[in-house]
Image 1 (cartoon, rainbow, N blue to C red):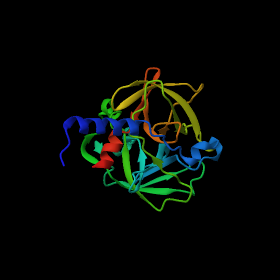
Image 2 (image 1 turned 135 degrees about the vertical axis):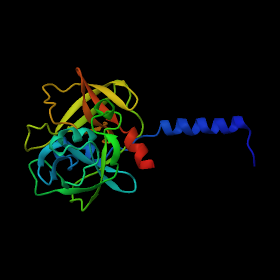
Image 3 (image 1 turned 180 degrees about the horizontal axis):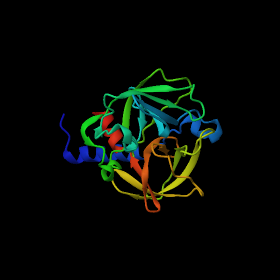
Image 4 (image 1 turned 90 degrees about the vertical axis):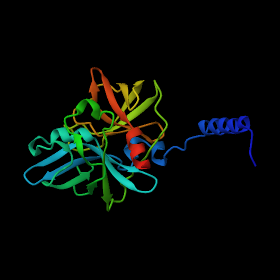
Length: 243
C-alpha cells in the first residue's frame, strides 16, 4: 500500500520527536561516588626495540556494540621522537603497548593491532589531529573490572556540563581525577571547553575520556588553545565503527 507523502513526513516527525524525548539510562556505576567507580581509564607503556615510553597519556576501552576496543589519542605519535615515525603507523620497531591503572602495573591489558593505522596520514599534521584524534586498537584478555564506555552519538550542547577523567603526567599513583568542564562552543568535529575545576594540572591528560553526566563518552582530551580546552568529539570514532 502506498501512503501520501504528507503522512510519511508526519510519521517521520513523530518518530524523531519520540526519540528526542527518550530517557537515557544512566550507567550503573555513574550513580556511585567516583571512589567506587570501576577501572575505566588507564595509562600507557609503549615499547619499541630501543626505547620504552613509560606512563604517557591516558587510554580507555570503548564498547562498539559488537566488540570492545582500546582507545587513546592519535597525537601521542608526537611523543615518539626517537622512532622517527612519519605516518600513523607504529612501524617495524614496535614491540608492545601495555595499558594499566596508574600505580598498578601488574594488572594490565595489551593493545594489539592498531585498527586505524594509516601509512598516508602524516604525524606532523597536528593542526588537524583535533578533528580525528583517535587511535583504535584490537584488545584481548581484558582483566575483570576493566569497564568499557558506551558512545553517545548525540553531540554535546553549548553550556552542557561534561567531565574528563584521567591522570596528569606527574601523578604516579592513586585514583584518576574527575575534572568538570563546560562546553563553550561546538566547532563541528571538536569542542572548545572551559575548565570549571580549579587548580588543574593539564600536563599529560591527553587521551583521557570525556563523559557526560550519565557516563557515556562524548569525546577525548586533545589539547588546548589559549584558555580553552580542545575535546575531539566522537564523530570520527562513531563513523569509523559504522564502516
